[in-house]
Length: 349
Image (tube, rainbow, N blue to C red):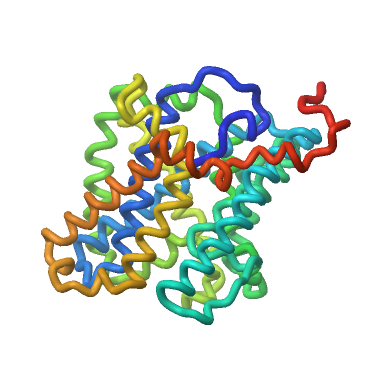
């Protein structure tokens, strides 16, 4: 889902199939998780699966985003690309989703660019994280410092909803971790010993989630609320920051351990995950707003499986080359027409 490598401030080169496969599989999990949200009475099993998926699917995306942002700096050409690949699409889709919501559900739905619509929070978040990249590359113990920032945000009561700043701060450690990873770290999790260990770990995670489903709120995994908003004391926010970070790392390692490293049918789709991410919301929110989820058949196990397969199919189609070709003007606008002619396209450090 991360923008292409040049937009992260790194020169274009041959894409690694492992990361494209990882991004495709992760975006499928994102779409499936979103498709489960409106299910009528999903039940304890769906809730357990939902919790496990939400524990790591965005963290692993953000870790990969940080990894590919290691070369980002504040050179003019890179800042320009940052704006055109994140800020401009955010503005376009914020308007598009607002109009879509008005047409399908609420005609008076407000346009609030400072409060991102549903899944759009990731674009301004990645923009802000990348702007702070030079700082995290200079500070000592960056991951520990970012965890402190996330914990303080969870404990605070005055963090506003603008740009969903709570999410920006609480997900920050995953981005900073990605900045500090090297290829050898990804090679470690792809060893066969890790792959074998990942199976019982995932089964244990599912068992714990099944037990916890009726006992705790999944809102902790959204990283959107403070401890106070979730009815917990401030110290619980700091504790949950560390616990969720640890859980996300373990499950992300399990996920990456089983990601294929060779070129497969899904590899080409990994380059279009940002399209799948931005566009699949129209399908899921449209189905929910138009009452399609109200059908009793969707409350059955067969209906839940059908929704899951439909979500995976839809997001896969949205990542394909024809969709990318048609929607490139909105998702990855070059914007060269708006650039001053005397501005070099590539500056030397």
